[in-house]
Amino acid sequence: MQQHPVTVLVIGSGFGGQVTAMNLLRRGITDFRILERRDFMGGTWCQNSYPGAAVDVPSPLYSIAAEPYPWTRMYAEQAELRDYTEHVIDSHGLRDRTVLGAEVVGAEWDGEAWTVRTRTGDVHRGRFLVNASGPLSTPVVPPFPGLDDFEGAAFHTNGWDHGVDLAGRRVAVIGSGASAAQVIPAIQPEVGELHVFQRSPHWVLPRPDRVFSPLQRRLLRLRPLQRALRTWIYWKLETRVIGFKHNRWLLRQVAQREALRHIEAQVPDPVLRAQVTPDYTIGCKRIILSDTLYPALSAANTTLHDRSDGIDRFDATGVVTATGEHLDLDVVVFSTGYDATDGLIPYEVRGRDGTTLADVWHEYPRAYLGTTVPGFPNFFVVTGPNTGIGHTSAIFVIESQMHYLMRAIEEVLAARAASIEVTPEAEDAYTTAIHREMERTVWHDGGCTSWYRSRSGRVVAMFPGFSFSFRRLARSFRPEHHVITSPALERTPA
Image 1 (cartoon, helix red, strand yellow):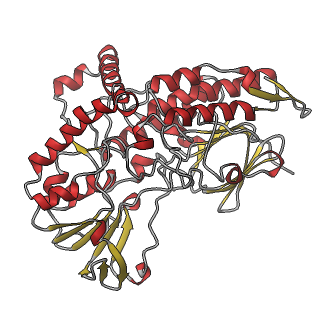
Image 2 (cartoon, one colour):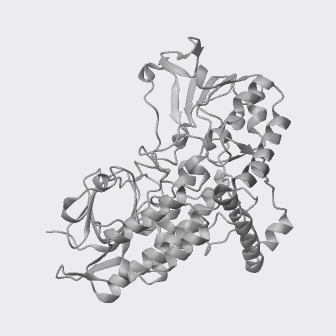
Image 3 (cartoon, helix red, strand yellow):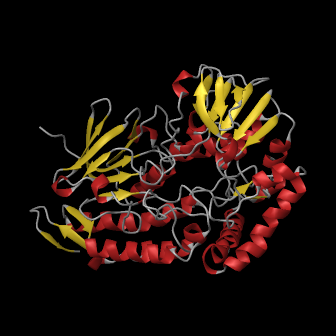
């Protein structure tokens, strides 16, 4: 006999899961359960504890709107972000509603509810299923030849091994993106040798960080001042979309010139300067904010290896480069990113008639408002396809999705219906419009290869416009774009 389903199952306890839970509680929906695959809650900032880890969006904006916080600095570091995350969890009593160690391996719609199975064999059922596992949660390590033969320590930044002492050791950092840009300066002073392997350089801008004084922190506890600072930061960042989409000349003349001046000021060696200077338009890849990366790369104990001198293979004691040089290594740090596009959801999802989400997404991931998919009733994805944001806080987008997600759930509960799903026509029209607009952005034709693209070549990670435009779309629930199914399985327009 199947167990009685809870109203909502939420997969993931990071910010996506927390904001979902907060919105459910606000609406009096208390019958929900959070499934977390790890043995602790919190997501990104509880999992990523690598040296130098910090946010790259100003903290007053990188916060849940209903949970402001007395941040100690403009760009919070990992420990403070972890404390904030745990503060949110405890403030809303989410620990008692969470099952830890519940790694989901499959979810299936049975016509009435979603049946979710975990790796331990447990089964959970929910009328609604919200995937909040996050796009940057499944780390990827490339299948380098000979990697299994390496006898030193090797780990991904997502699972930093704090038991490994780096002092005086020969260390390689593979990757040069956002995480690597934080790790490299943090460990460079203590290691003996540091080898950094980059496929292509990233544009780097100065990091306008500052520590808030005791007086400033006291003032920022006042809600009106908190809101004013948050609003100012939001609109300042929102102007970046003008360059990303509407005015490429402005992007090159302002942001790219500033980045070039940053290289000129911090990289005296002309050979290294050439290695770290990208050949694509700024913004095509994620822009890095750092005042310490270039000095670390310029240090005497650091060697930067570009594509021409990349890794050919591993052996027991280190790596052999493409030029045939053997490098003895003690520790290898993989800063090689995540399966964030085609592998957006790391478990099998079967919707109506047994259709799998993987089949629907075989060409590229797509979803109405980046949130829901035809044929998958009562199923919602937080930070789904084309909801990424390259200029502002991801939490703002998550909160925007909640306007739509909660309205959809309320439509079903108010009508005492069984389910709601978006129509194929509405999803197709939305996705077509998204990719038409994407053609105007730097992510589409800025001249780089980035994780923003799926295997299809389409940019599926980013939303091609202002974040307030996405919020406006999410607020405007369109009944004609949906079908509500009655308990008797009779499908009718919403």
